[in-house]
Image (cartoon, rainbow, N blue to C red; front, side):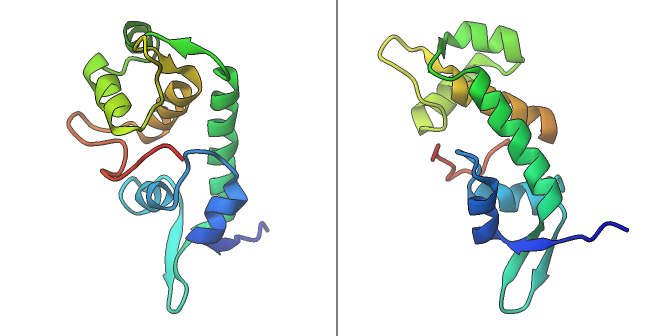
Length: 136
């Protein structure tokens, strides 16, 4: 029988060691998207199931490493990942994905967002990320 371990969100962020996987995002992935198993413990707040979190963090980190130190155009990001160009422009302007002066996007951030969208499968018109999300 496998033991299920839960960790507080603040510990989950450190444990995941995944740039971009913030406390707000983990909470949304748990409560709203039901992608991670969670619970609430008096005095500790929201806790996250450790094994599911680590699987997600591993997948997101692998996606990030594929695009390390590379850039992609917004048109190519739309074609490759199926996320509309308007969304990429909005993410760049909000600081969700980093870009350069030539309007190219940092592929590491794009790959992270695309992998996250693959997991969440957001419905049309429903935001993938919390409104206050910024790359960290």
